[in-house]
Amino acid sequence: MGAKMVEFNGWDMPVEYPPAGGIIAEHNAVRTGVGIFDVSHMGDIRLSGLDALAAVQHISMNDASRLAIGQAQYSALLYPQGTFVDDVIVHRLAEADYLLVINAGTREKDFNWVRDNMRQFNCKVENLSDEFTQIAVQGPKGVELLQKLTDADLSAVKFYWVTRGTVCGLKNTLIARTGYTGEDGFEIYVPPHESTSAMVWNKVLEAGKELGVAPCGLGARNTLRLEAKLPLYGHEISDNINVWEAGLDRFCKMEKPDFIGRAALEKAKAEGVKRTLVGLEMIERGIARDGYKVLDENGSEIGYVTSGSFAPFLKKNIALAYVPPQFAAVGSTVKVEIRGLGVKTQVVPTPFYKRPKRT
Amino acid sequence: MAYPSDFRYTKEHEWIKADGKTGTIGITAFAQESLGDIVFVDLPKVGAEVTAGKTFGTVESVKAVSDLYAPASGTVTEVNAELATAPEKINKDAHGAWMIKIALKDPSELGSLLSAADYEKFVNEEGGH
Image (cartoon, rainbow over all chains, first blue to last red; front, side):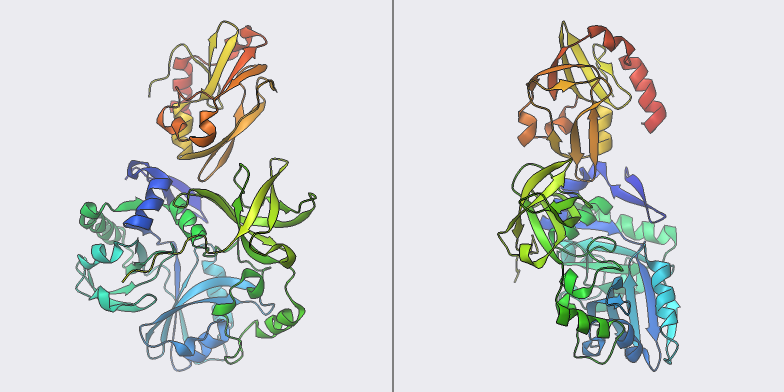
């Protein structure tokens, strides 16, 4: 394939595919056409049984009682402090059957944490991480591409809904209209045998040829999610950042029955946040990178950058950073310390990129 | 990959071409390929001093920030301003897209750098390319 590999949390992952043009070309293929990602490193936890809903409600911050069968939601697992174990997508597969899709680097931690907090529920917890290979087909032409390979009617699947169908001859394949790119698209869950996943990968590439499909690596996955302001564990969210700081309020349902982290969040809300996540766009020359300091006009340290890059579609240098609320207003200028110099940036509205509405 | 035989090379993947007392400096084709899409370069100003083996600037791809190391010592006489707005020219033609020119302090310093053949051997061993 000509992929450039990198080690990521113990996985050998493709960072980019130079024959496809590299990160910038991969990124723009997803924004304007379609790209595919091997995201088999993602983990999966299944919760099923009589108390499955109560169990999901207990360990996650969004309101899973609102999910119809076949629907999915963005959510997070929280520590009692209101900080993040991980962010997750909760899929409701059947009446009392939920699938939590979790991050690669936190798989073991997440599974142990879920299992340990399940003891009072009549609910089966299964680590299905090694049962699936996940392939993401992302971009405005993703639906057209995947439809060629499945008998499921994809036009009937709304964003953040799941269905099942035969994909590349594999019966009863889970197809979710989800993704991590800020675009429309699908994530399909196929058996993990290397020959099977390679067969699907190659068929998707072949069927997508006329649509200009690009195989995409972790590099483009990161710049795509950054433009769309989708959080990455260890960067925008972590075990010492809480929900309010991360700005994920709309996925946290304080009015639902009690859940782990709720009491701390209530207290934190009353006290007010000391820092908040903002989007920055460079005014002067330079690229703010993860971990760089944010400075006020006088050069005093006020925060730090969580993610930063050249944004291939927007063609700007952008970053996400934590700063105190008084610096967070759109239009405020702050500096980022790059190689010892304060480089001027401006707080801008986020997400940096929002996909155009299509009819 | 063809490395011009009239250039000298560093193990940090810079090249230098000497023309009398002037040295022209850039990064190698191997370097640009390893970096991927180059989106930013930070270069010294005319008049700045650079020292052999020390950093004189940075080059950034989408994923990574890398230091640039001076192959020789001298005073910067010219900077390729085009790279500020079109850094991708380095990806297109690494051996043509020069970064800085310096007035060489001691042209004999180049004697300790790698020849094209030695550099090619070095990257074949290092990168498996």
